[in-house]
Amino acid sequence: MAAQETTTSSEAKTALNSERARRRRDVARTVRNVRERLSVSDGNEANFEYELLLTFSKNRLSAAIALPLFALIVGSISLLWMRAELIVGWLTFNIIAHVLLLMACRRFDREVPVDDDLRRWRRQMISGDMLYGLTWAGFFLLQSTAPGHDGSEIFQFATMLIVIAMLTMLSASQPKALLAGTLPITLAIVVSFLNQQSAIHYAMMAMAIGAQGFFLMLGNQLHISTVTMLEFRAEKDHLIAELEQANAISDEARRRAEEANLAKSRFLATMSHELRTPLNAILGFSEVMKNQLLGALDNPTYRDYAADIHNSGQHLLNLINEILDLSRIEAGRYELSEEAVPLAELLEDCKHMMAIRAKKKHISIVETYEADLPKLWADERAVRQMILNLMSNAVKFTPTGGEVQIKAGWTAGGGQYISIRDNGPGIPEDEIPIVMQAFGQGAIAIKSAEDGTGLGLPIVQALVQMHGGKLELRSKLREGTEVIVTFPASRVLEAMPALEETAAANTDPRRAAMRRSMIRKAS
Image (cartoon, rainbow, N blue to C red):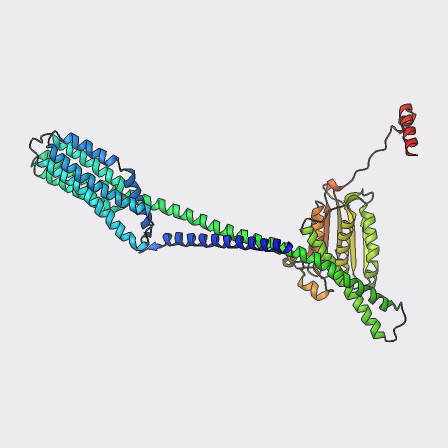
């Protein structure tokens, strides 16, 4: 059953990883496409050929009803000057040209053409626009030859302006299509007015040519605006794609970190037991041999070997304990057992514990405590571990015949502090962040002192932060190091005044009766 659950979990993880890999490939493909669209083409502008054609087709499809309706209105009004059969024939050709262009636009809108097909589609759009413009040019030429067309010149001119304006709005994304659709209309108006041979017709002919130029410039500006809008949209898509990719990478990194953290926790939980069990035997048997409890060892070298084995095992056990403590703190599983802790007494106890190591190196320990320090609300074991770690570092890095200063007192904010200072080699300023990291050690400290694990200060810093305090490390090269641990004012306990109503409570008959009944029940 357990094997089946393991297999199911493995399959689920495999499917999840495959899905994430597919998403990353899609995001990378999107990023690549956006970058290609943003690439410079011929040194002029970004390549948005497909988007411009798509804008053209959508504009044409949006006017699918408006253009035939306008042509029908124009044809109806033209019945005042032209025969009905000519109007019907022109409307037929106009609607056919319009429908052919709409069909092409609809096919382009539904399909996803490749880059090689874009030129063919653009030629179709230009041809369709030209055909539609030719139908309007034919209308103006037919109207100019119709009998009794007096007064229709203003109608022709107004119709020409409206048609060119509509084509400018619809075809601005394709300047060549705009030119192909509007130029035949302007030429037809010019020919129509040129045949009239009057001043007013020449004036309207000039205005028609000017209007053609104006609308071409307007179309060019609309084209530039469209390209700019597409560039901004492409940049936005590019940023979104990059953010999606970064998010996918972050999710993958977080998943791997969680798996690594879980594997580390399992490893530490397993190895803490697997390592401590043989270490207990190593420490016990080596201590028996070192102290010769079961009989004398004639060879002194064996005794030295037993002492070395015991010291090495003790060092390894301390290292395992420090790693487990730091892992529990980082995992949030270290729980504080808070109680009232006398800081000065705790410092005195830790000093006595370190006195033997200090005496071996002829190091003097100087204490300075402020009087009447109230107790702290803290975890006694954690505070003791902080002090021992800091004192151990101070004794370790202080040269023979040196001095270690221990201070405790009030802070300016009403809290309490512990200061432990040595006159050792010190730490360079650029190495202070290193020694505050797990397994971090300074170069000078490694050369001039005993070997260490580099976990003492990180553990102290983590425990201080759990108490809401602050750890400060001050050091100057070849002058020494000072470590200051500050506890906040909220951790300082105030002395409670004595109760004044004790005597009244003893003389109250009701309370006395209740107390006697409780004593009888307890007995």
